[in-house]
Image (cartoon, rainbow, N blue to C red):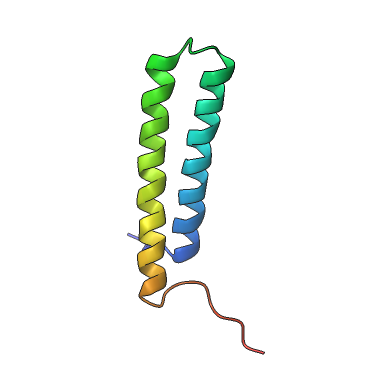
Length: 71
């Protein structure tokens, strides 16, 4: 199995967190009509996004983060 890189984890964390915000916005616009489905999906999306963000942070701390620019 391929190991996830810092960039993949950071982008996935941002994408899942953004999905949670979009789901909550859709819940607001629908007038809480689908709250039984949208709210749990948003919570799961936030948890997955948080897990990817933590993984990206751990990779960065180990030195596998984004390369530093050399001038």
